[in-house]
Structures are given as C-alpha cells and as structure tokens.
Image (cartoon, rainbow, N blue to C red):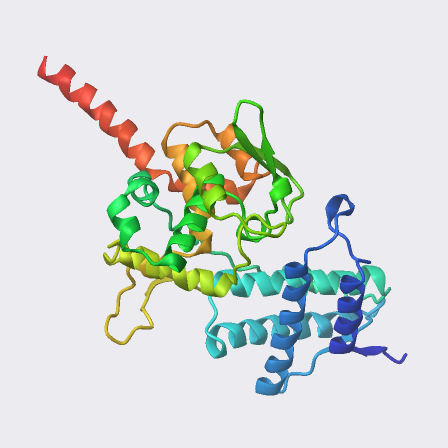
Length: 352
C-alpha cells in the first residue's frame, strides 16, 4: 500500500493562510492579534533556516493503521524534535522560553493538520516537551517610582524627549496595562466625572478583558501636559525606541548598580553576560524595559497591600493566571516586611 506524503512547509503555508483569514480562532471565538499571527510566521522562518542548516527533510505522512509506519514515524518525530531544538539552542542561541514558545506553536500547527486537513499523522507531536523558564521580573521599588513622580531636581535635568519618556513610563507604571494597550490609548478611553475625578477604561487586545481604574492626580497631570491634537492619548511612540529611552532614563536616575541576569537553556540556569565590552555584568538600568511598567504597577499594588483580586481586576489577568502568580511570587518586599515583623515580636517575647 502506497503511503501518502506531504510537504510540511506547504501545509504550513495553508495553516498561515487560515490564520491570517481568521479561520482559526481562539477559545471563545476571539480573533488572534496581529502579534500572534506574526509569531507563526517567525516559526516558518525558523523552520526554513533549520532546513538550510541541517538538510532535514520536513514532511508529513499519513500513517493510517500501518503498524510498521507508526514506528517509523514515531522515530521521525523524535528526530525532528531533537534536531530542531538543538538548532534553536545551539545554532540560534535561544533560551528555554523562546524555544518552548516555538515548539508550542509547532504543536498547534501539527494538531491543525491532524484535525483540519484529515491527515492521520499520529500522536507523536503531543510528546514534544515545551521548555519553560521563570523569567526574572524587573520592577521598580515604590521609592523609585515615587522618585520619578515627584523629584523636581531630576525633572529639571531632562530634555523635552526625556520628559515625555518619563511621563509615559510613569503612567504605564501606574495603570499596569500591557504595552500594546498603553501605546494605543485614545482620548475616548478617559472618563471624566463631574467631581473632576478621571477614570481610564479599556479592553485588552490580548485577553479582551475590561479594565477601569481611577487615575491619581499625577497621572491626570501627565495626560493633560501630553495632550495631542489627534484622537490618541499620547504621541505615537515606536516601541523599540521607547525601550532605549527608558533604559537611558533609568541610567540618568542613577540606577546603575549591578544586577545579574539569569536565563536557562535546557533547564540549566546561568548568568548571562552583558553585550557591553566594558563590563560583564548587566546593570539595573540595562534591564529596565517596557515590560517593567506593567510589572511595576502590579508589584507596587501588591507591596502596598492591595488584595490580589483587586489587582487582578486592574491588570486584566484572568482568575488562576499563572502569569499573575509570578508577580505574587516576586513580592519579596512584602514577605520581608511580614517576616521581619514576626521575628521582631518573637524577639520581644523572648526578651520578656
């Protein structure tokens, strides 16, 4: 009996077409974001690079009930997984999270082939291990955020661009939105009340969760002094340039102390060296990024005693979100305060 064989990259093109035309939907019938669609295109590029580097044949066979072919394909997918992950780790130098991210999307593609193309390729892709790592959370301490909000001497040292960067960064550290949502805020996202209070309301592009938060006076002042003539709340900002400007702002603030950057490859942690030839170690200012805004907002609320349910409503995390509990785990400042208070009481009793 002749075995039917298909070109994997051609099938991947069909998969991308279905994705781009919104024929593939997320749970609940939600459409994918443009960033999610782009991620699948990056997987295809990596597969092409993988073939060019290794000469590995990317194909899919329909195994039916053929036991001999079942064992053959089992070995093929084991080899595919091993060589592709080796390529991502060793040739591309990627870390566990990114490798796992791509393996997860490859599994999604193969599942789609199985269910939507009617090709019985077997269950082997289900055994592909998705690598994960606990990414180091970089967030400002409450004292650092307060410095950016209120230090007039520091403010006077900044030029116009640096002041706009600081304003947008502080606003992001306050409201806790994802950077994609923050940079797309419009004037219509503001709700002005008769008592002069102002609310920010928005729906997350990623999770479609609704967020409404009352803005503090300093955040309202930021909005007012950064008014645009158009419909956008803030000036159009390139995310890459904004990242660079944030790092420069943190350096100007004096946050230049060494901070080891930990990553993992194949589950093995190590300290990543800084790309700067003058120093091996990363500094805090080097690790500050657009992600720091959301992390700062969440950890600040937790550190200052806001309950988890309220924080989750503000941040737009779903109940039971594993991403949210990374911030809870990071909440070392609050843990230190509670344990210090406990040990102080214990010491006092011991003295008595």
